[in-house]
Image 1 (cartoon, rainbow over the protein chains, first blue to last red):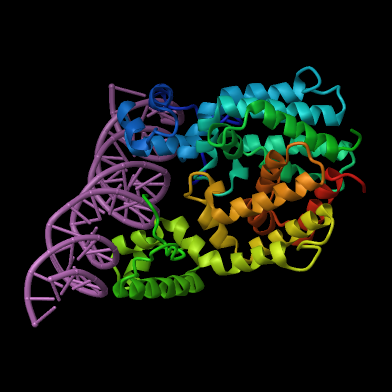
Image 2 (image 1 turned 180 degrees about the horizontal axis):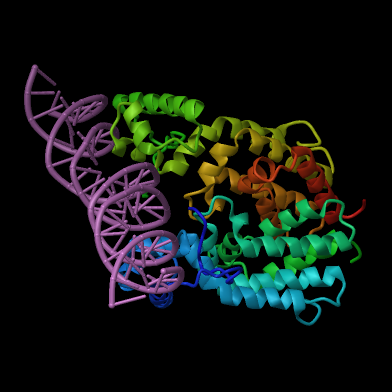
Amino acid sequence: MSSIPIRPDVPLGAPHERSDAARNRERLLNAARDLVAELGAEALTMDALACKAKVGKGTVFRRFGSRAGLMMTLLSDSESEFQHGFMFGPPPLGPGAAPKDRLVAFGEGRIYFVLENGELLKAAGAATRNRFDVPATKLSHRHMEVLLREAGIADPWVMAMSLTYALDPERIVDDVRVRGISPTRLADSWRELVTRLLGAV
Amino acid sequence: MSSIPIRPDVPLGAPHERSDAARNRERLLNAARDLVAELGAEALTMDALACKAKVGKGTVFRRFGSRAGLMMTLLSDSESEFQHGFMFGPPPLGPGAAPKDRLVAFGEGRIYFVLENGELLKAAGAATRNRFDVPATKLSHRHMEVLLREAGIADPWVMAMSLTYALDPERIVDDVRVRGISPTRLADSWRELVTRLLGAV
DNA sequence: ATAGAAAGCGGACCATAGTCCGTTTAGTAT
DNA sequence: ATACTAAACGGACTATGGTCCGCTTTCTAT
């Protein structure tokens, strides 16, 4: 997988995306959304996508780089929304509340977000070398790191990584769907974890 | 993947393993160990293994069920040793110490165990639906659950799951080998986590 | 309008995990 | 020894993610 031209935010002298490229991007995105709606994210194969979009397989991979890349693209809308929530939204999720409360809210939000987009998230994480490469994961990690630092944790970077993995999509989805744990129970346990971790009951 | 006849612990009227089966098992195990030693676990392919062991591919899969199953078999010795350590060994890892200290020791032990057998563990976990299916993982989870319950955690089962994922092999290996975090730093952070989680500094 | 270059295209091709099923073979009962 | 049966075997076959590279299209400069 070389550089991923997924659709850069037109950073510099935007090389002016070619019209055929734009057309195929549209086709692919539509086909992908259809397939996910029809059969679920897990069942989406790159061959089927290429076929349904009436496009060559090479085109699919140039556009998205990999299956994980495709899933990330499909996720980007809801993901942005969630990100906006914890970065700019109202407390306790957004700025203005105590780190502990923000972290509790973050975990809860994340749990429900994962449960809504679970398949996509699992698919985005799998097949990637280190799941930490997912940009959204990096951002979440950074967010938690800042909160943990404010709360006086000695090594916020590493602790944020522990919490990141505790909120792993695969873990959350399987807990709920395979092992029958209710989302509420997960959220409660997360609250207990954060509360104890950041002192004071 | 149907029932896995990996080499049952001869549970009942052991149907007397056939001699050709035994011979091939030996061949496969030896070949697998050689290949791992030579090229690393990641580079081991089932085709190469079958070929090197002078055995058909079907035989490989009958024996181990899957690539993950093979890796688990390869791990079982060192894994048993580690398990023995936290179940029957001397404190603080084994019984006799306070839950908090046992949990700290468990995490440290796990970190170093993972760093020694990282490739195998990653390979065993990947390709499995839920990595939690790995029997050794279930045992570790149970162990932590018991300790957490003793320490008064409200929902030990779920909390143990959070900690299980915080100690995920992929996470540990990538932290150390990709992101350059020292094992010591990981262990220190784990200590901080457990110490704060189980009260009293 | 035209030509040249760069970007994009597409599908054959590769690698690899895992399945299937007709054939072989090791034990067993006679 | 012989015949029988269930287990074991092996390798062709499938599914799927991902790569490669010669061909086509779009854009731009003239």
